[in-house]
Figure 1 (cartoon, helix red, strand yellow):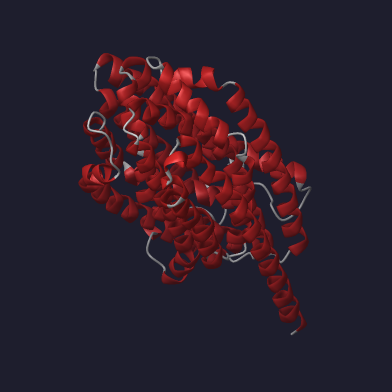
Figure 2: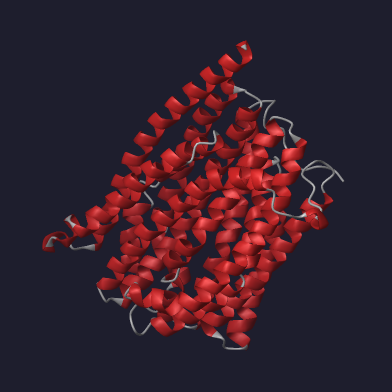
Length: 457
């Protein structure tokens, strides 16, 4: 079987990074289309209350799953390091530890999500007219969490091995299936939000099976052999050391977003909630495109660190920062320019909700490249195997700063507005990017110096 993997340690860098990143961008957009299709279908056939019900679960869902998605990031970094340093035994053990960890994590998340759905939504002050549908959507969605994590872990391994094309192909298949099932369950069977959630988990199950099949067919040391699956403690520890801080960081980001969502809910305006949710979903397309550059940074830096190619690490950082800036400004600007038309795909029965969506997109989409810069530097630090200190900086710069803003400035009557609430995003992105950039320079200098000492010995 012909390998789809790229060599991340040798060859031209700019064209290589672009070719590596494009399938990740397309894959990320397709994955986001799962939720977008949910919102569009319920918006067209069920109304803005159903849109608010689906969108209001996003922040709390991300809060619950981000810890375990962080472990998939750790698995990918471990795979990249092993490939770059040609440690086939460590690579085999990492892969055969990661898959059972994904299964066990998925089962645990299903139990947590199904049992705590309604209490968590009540805690978020979800309005009474939205709460029943929101809790239904969330319970059904979490029933398929094992599929979600199997795909994330498998795709992370493939990307670390230089293969970004396979996950794109499989998500294309799953995305088409998701749209078809959405229409079948909602239009034909009138299942409302439960139908779109069921369509999502079925399509995610298909993508998970296809990714595992690809790993089982690989001709190299990345091949997955199910009967050899077990928990190897050495790669698990490394996976946790790198992935757990990334997961905690994601959780803390989600906590700040949950608090922001609660602040939006506190206005008691269903139109604001629907507009905010639809806008956030559109912004997701910009974010996932920029985050694809961050994922490329992680794996390029990881493999080149394993090979001690420090010159390529620094070049990777410069190229990825430039790419994410151009991508963020272009996509964010276009999203805001066509805000009314884009929001109209989600909301068909409320001009007020569309107006609120436009307001959020002005504050978030236009300066969104700052978030991309922050994520690229964070990705580079993870590729270097540094997760703990960047996690602490991100928690302080993003989460704590936003929370302080909400409980101080936002509470002042004249500033208790959606505009003031959204301004906290811009401030947190800029501050965190500057701090993470300084950390990257220090970490790279120390690793280069340590490598010189080891070589001299």
